[in-house]
Length: 225
Image (cartoon, rainbow, N blue to C red; front, side, top):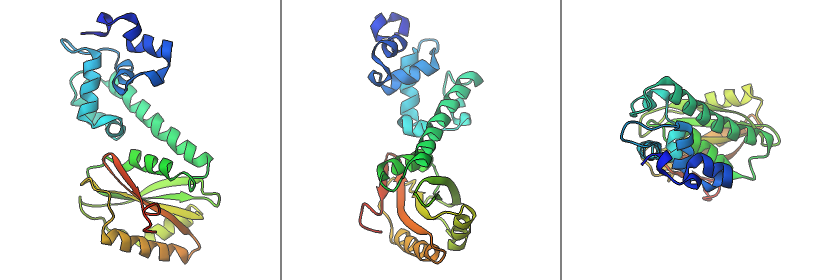
């Protein structure tokens, strides 16, 4: 069934204009961006397949244009460019919100932001969110990359980056591609090591956030920091 076969009030574009974007499913919103399907496959079906393939909107946020090319119907550059632009706008909007307000009091938003950035990476990435004295985001930097099981993190490099950004505080972050977000003993040891190193230059570690596909954990909320 194509969109044209649906009743007027059930078509995604008309439904959005009549009831607002919050009334639409993820597939319907994506279908508006895709506009058309392929022969024998309507745009709603195509949107469903894209979301399933990339594990929902969160996965789509971390999908590059080359990966999108492999989806039937997204071989052309126009649709892939539009999707990539929308995903980047979403990431930048979240970053702007973090820059404009204190993030220490909204760990759920920080976890969401880190999830968007790192949650679906196939390899382990260690990053840091550098904050000013009011705990607003100055920058997020990916500092180290590793295998699926471990990353070599050098405290000296983290300290130098904190000084470079003139940060007053830091939120540490990394992903677990395996899925479980429970911190390992090595994660806890690393957190203590970085906290001590940064304290020497008067930079406070506010949290260490661990994310995986569809999951996130705050070590502060878990009583581990």
